[in-house]
Image (cartoon, rainbow, N blue to C red; front, side, top):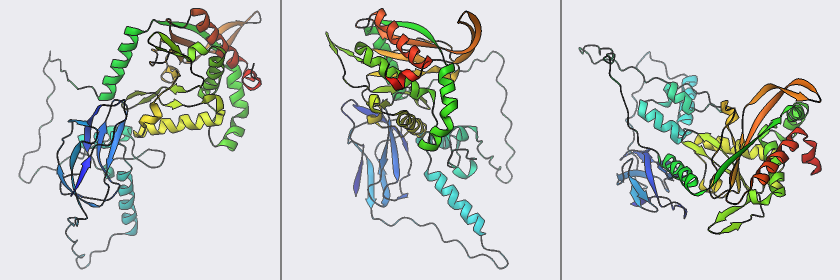
Length: 406
């Protein structure tokens, strides 16, 4: 009999919540199967089987608080699985399953094994099976949107039972409410943001950038970039490169406060805010001064995929000296982002909107973006914040500066 234990948490995590059991007592498991999922204030951890066997007992229930290395249940190692009853031979005149049907069953099983924790949770709540959900994922996998949009199959009424009555409309004047507990990640986000507001002297400065030169650069070299690197050239990599150069010019914006000291970081680890089903997460690009544009694009694409499937690790999101958030992907025109402590500043990107501007004495229409820099006024003065934004603006309006180190 082997104990099933909570994985060892990092030093910054004290406890977690048992999110779901993926196996039932008495069910056979194979080595590497995901038995349960535990949510911490940063990531979802998967508890995997260390050997073949049968799930013998469950000692912690879904929703319970669990500690590092606490026992969740037991596994009877090597025990023969309870086999399903043998299928009866086809009756005379009944044809064997078609090869196409066998292949479809295998595909369904593969899709079921590839489900992310978020998808499994939705499907369990709706009583869905993988075979009942049309898949639209890039590799034929089921996404959370697929699961949310699928309907549970209608249950046929028992023989002799009256058909179920349609749901009655709510009486006039009824105002329904639902109380839902915050997830650990949402609780942690709330605590951190409130802590920043209580301790930092937050201030935001704005500027605007004409994105036409950057858009022209992308349009001119996009096909060659994709052919060579296998990834598209996006705006974010150019902003990361521009922000890195600006951080070099204004080191205090890359610094952090520790009591009465200012810690100046001699490296550039930039967090990229990513929206996920479980809330906002900020994975870290490390040593961005040593990364090419292609490296940055590949890393961001990898983070986005891991966030979507719930595979981001604590290491992915630990540290960081500066952050960038792009509300423009959701249509935001202007915002005042909150810094990610203990960092001292965050850059906000916004929607690109064609607007009339004055250029060389003429009124022209140009694709403009508002930039916002929220910063901790305790150590960053307005002059440095404004000049930092101007440096980014100049780099994006003349991308050759990024190549010539100007």
